[in-house]
Image (cartoon, rainbow, N blue to C red; front, side, top):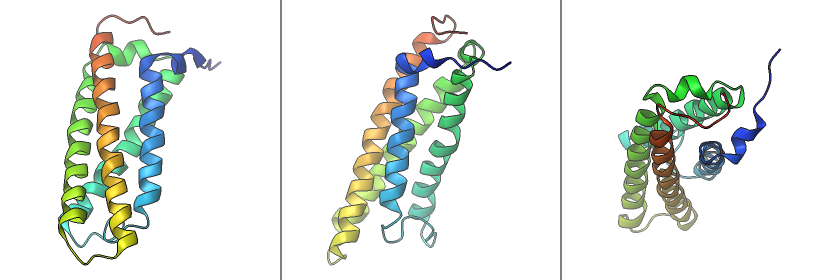
Length: 149
């Protein structure tokens, strides 16, 4: 019988995973209306930025479900989550910087698209902070855990 560990939401790791998932969903929803951002892979920046958000949207919920099902001890004995959080944090900073540069330095762009691009860039940068803080807690929990098994 599968038992769910609802206490994971009260831990820093569970809380930040939920924040990362929620902010990524919001970012994807705002980015849907941004010109050349999603599904318009004509530019390398579009492919990179959309790829970062898709990677975040696929792997972070898998970590959360793994914790939710009670396998946190198995994940925290390896450096997998620490490496993932570090890489995605760097990628989110890069995506946010690329988008800020794109939508702040091209005059004459349509105002709603420019605002949406700046919003997506800001959300990427905020999400990188969540991943960075989650990296800190994942590093602290690696090797010894006080989370429910």
